[in-house]
Length: 80
Picture 1: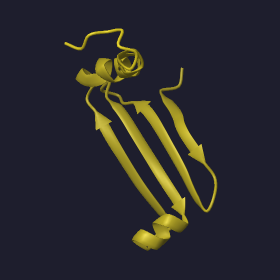
Picture 2: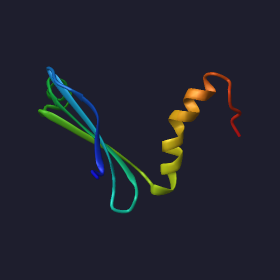
Picture 3: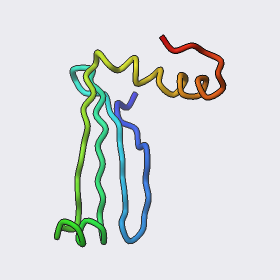
Picture 4: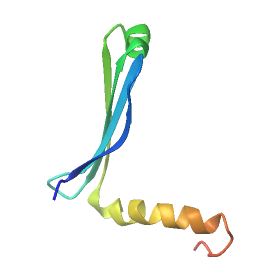
């Protein structure tokens, strides 16, 4: 089973790629790369890379958040 998934991909004047993966220590790593016009204009380089690392102790909250967001909008759960 792959430990990396592509979350977003867009091809255009500025192409954007965003991936998520599980690191060796169980952390969640979300990384991205913008390639093309926008990075060239703002940074003077053809690409811009970025990432965020979420510690493994927060992985459950990350996985539960979409469910919480879905149900809280419908007033079906109580937030504690």
